[in-house]
Image 1 (cartoon, rainbow, N blue to C red):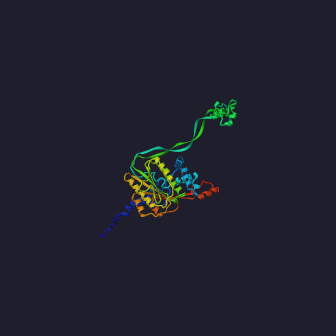
Image 2: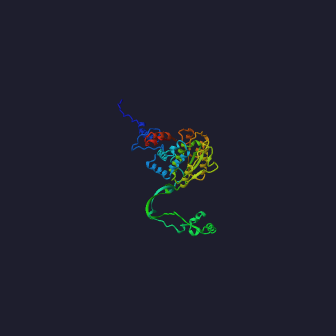
Image 3: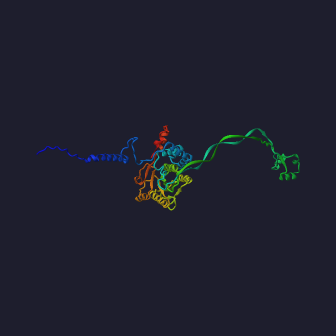
Length: 431
């Protein structure tokens, strides 16, 4: 018996339909991660709902108020005049440009506006123990010409004259026999023997003729006046830091070879000056210094110059400005190795985040052992070339590599033509 039986087909479960929502969620999540962490993709304009996480490619630019504050610190501490005086001692053609305080101040402003990596290399304490923040203020003294309002006593000529000679000034002894005849008549008629005897003894007096002395009377008056006086003026420096045991160290290596004289030396000193002044208020930051050429000063067997307090940091800058650039060959490898070893010795007793600021114009070959020593001790090397010449070997082991370029001759010719100086700061200096 045949029966027509129509049965409903069984519902087929599709696995893809079950996994599709999870797959879309995974794709969206990967896309978000790719946008957050990919640095190679072109940055789009951020929307209010966008989130972007990544490493900052460069230091944040200083605000105009911060630049003016740092530049005012250079003015108050008389750094611009000191650097101009150092430039004038070289007596080279570019000294006519750098010995001008206005040009030096423009150079310092440009360095602050560029805010290179080495400017705030010791600003943030990345290592060491944390502690409570401590802020305060200390002072440095500079001798300046200031104006003060004071009550002073003045003596002005009076309206009366008086001539009151003393009696002892109306007669004087005769100097010789030729003046005896100007004396009294009783002395002139004495016997010759007695006359000569009394003249020799100075007993014969003659009148002083034409002895007119005008004596002027002065009157005393009190006046309030504005005076220009030279006195030590306090310069306040903001001190900030923490109470932890950690800290940061900046080791300065300056090339003092003879090739650095003139423009290169001024650029090198301006870099050091800007770095020291920008971070001198950090309590836990210390500075070490050596200058190197074929030999190192201080020598290798001696400790480097060290500055921890505010006064020591100020004195260290004066010592650096007194550098005599008369060295011979440039030994960059030895200088870096000695600096790394000094840092390693300090780390035996302290927890320090260390960086080296190397300033040179040499194109020396960097040995492999030099780079290994920097990596072994975890030291950040910041290199500043005062000439626009690349050094790939030195840049490979450096945390940052900067090349400074300035041409004062172009600026001088432009000024001679009467071109206004407003756009010059951005065209004259290149990093």
